[in-house]
Image (cartoon, rainbow, N blue to C red; front, side, top):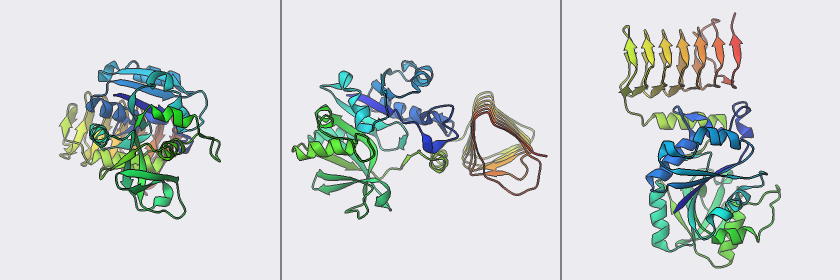
Length: 353
């Protein structure tokens, strides 16, 4: 079986962080979102992976390469216009016609095992299988209606939901999907919807099955989603110290200090990762904070935040909470003691008085 990761979206809801790069490379616990998906496919034994990309194709080729880093093969498929998920899947017909393949949305973090979904798909004999999850507010999601082991209907963000099973963003699809896509028309928003194509399969009598997951998942399409995902992943980290901790620093048991990092005269609470060659001095960090590779944090208090690569933070005595600081940014602040929240894009400079 092969894998298909859909990464053609522009990430407008994640601006300013996506002005200079694809949303799929934004870090969660210091690891780009798309890396988690590649690793999950690899764990499922899927080593032939196709990535559908848009206008940021060069960035994907540079950062993912040919997949050697994960011992997989990665090939790229260009989606020249962002005309919907079904259009993105259709872009892969030349590579995946005649195949059954796993499709994952490239901005989703999904903890459910891909191997488990594939095994369930094979066991049921379905032509396609969709991962579902119960949600509290069905009106925010694409929803599925069920009868026995079948999906009988799919509705995008219904006003009056018939159930609470949301479409998560992970599918096992047979190549019948390509024929179904060719029969649908653009939706009201001008896109070819994957839900419409799957509904076409259902109308033609094909078995579209499902698996309901109890595992955590998130669409990291907004800054607040990115922070929530960072918190969720950091909850599961194990204490590893590969860097240096000196000068009476206090470090929790569930802290990851990566190679070449230095912690000096600081307090690091649980659920924190400090990236390679990062320097933390006279700081109070955590919980639920990731400090990116090469960043420097001095005389600063931070919690519940994402600090990306190569940032410099100095004198933030009033503290940062629920903040995202873009790669290469510099912030120096010495005014007051009130905690603040910041969402700062790449290579920004903010200087206090």
